[in-house]
Amino acid sequence: IASWPKLVNSSVSISKAGTLLIGDLEGSHQVYHEYSWQQKAFVETVFPALYPVLSRAEAEQLQGQVSKQDTLPWHDPRGTAERLALQVFGWSRADFEANIQAENTDSIEVTLLHRNPTITVIVTLQQLISSNPDGLWFVTSAQTPGIVLNQPAAASSVHAPISLQGSGIQANSKLSLRLLDSSFQVIRGTTPGSVSTDRSKRFRGSLSYGSEAASQAGVIVIQGAGKKKPYQAGEIMLSKVLLG
Image (cartoon, rainbow, N blue to C red; front, side, top):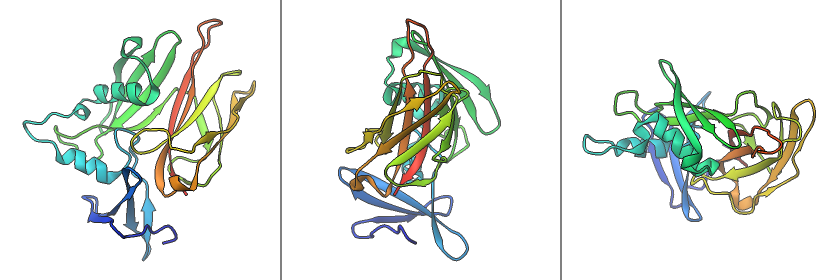
């Protein structure tokens, strides 16, 4: 494996899905890697959760805390989406509402509607560890309808500087880019490059980060604040990548 982590002071376990989980202490927080056996080799895989954790190891730990006496915030899909808005988007609770939009066999969609300026975000949640009544809900997608991120692809491996290209952003929208770690803090040393949009609703931008941030999962936050005067709705999209 080209990116096999050092196993000194590492924790190693097997997940309920049969994958290999390796945890390493990076700075002040634990970073987890997941590997599956494919064609006679271990290949690093990406757990689909964007929130409240990024790794299968952390998700299984959360699920393991569940008991008849212990109710976690992540039992409620709408409550999980609300916490995403507060912690990751930086919204104030009085400025938005959350409503369940659709319930499918394996997922739930929650619509987050921010007022003044208007920002609509569709949040998809799934019970990734346990599908029984005690199963916790994890965000697997969160974006304003219509936004497409062509580069980098979701769950892909990237290297600094990250080049971003996509479409579906309003012309003249003022975008900001952030790169978050597994504790949903901006990764130290992250430097957003210039972001441009055009009349065809395409956008380009870049994100740089230091070598100390490599070898972990990160969440790219694309966020347009919107305007009250002249009126312009805002946009948000989250995408997960593996930092190389």
